[in-house]
Length: 196
Image (cartoon, rainbow, N blue to C red):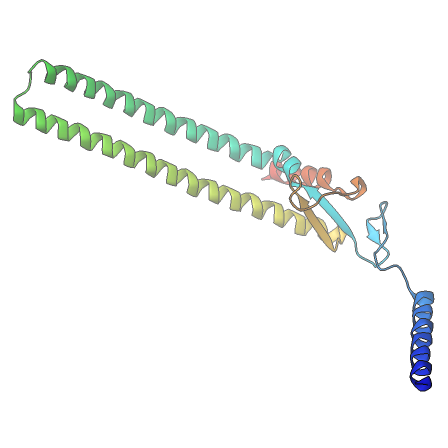
């Protein structure tokens, strides 16, 4: 029993000595970043971009959005015009039907024509919605490619290890403003877009 107590004591003493030695040689596990350079003591260089600000200030994105708004307005106007014409034809049919202006066969024929026209209008709405969704997806890909390609070029000189994105509170809850390169990215993107 004495041996067991002695072994336990030696084990505790050895463990204590090891922890003390490790504590003496221990460096901070979390890297300490220096805001002026963006370089952490571990050698990592990190920056972030506020995506919301980028998208609201990048002229290419603004132009794409304006183009989409115009297309949506044109589609809405076209659909409204067709809808009003159809509604007018339906009211005209209803008036003539109530005043016995049609034979039964002619009334059925006109009713079927108007139903087909209404169905065609619904199909046109779906077609336009799909076309807008496809174009919107294409625009998003162009925008993403434009930003990613610029950041690769930008980072060739800056040599960041990580460039994080921050959209609201989605990815980055806090970022030291010294690491925010949004303004530089917007300026570079807009300068490059003007050249194109």
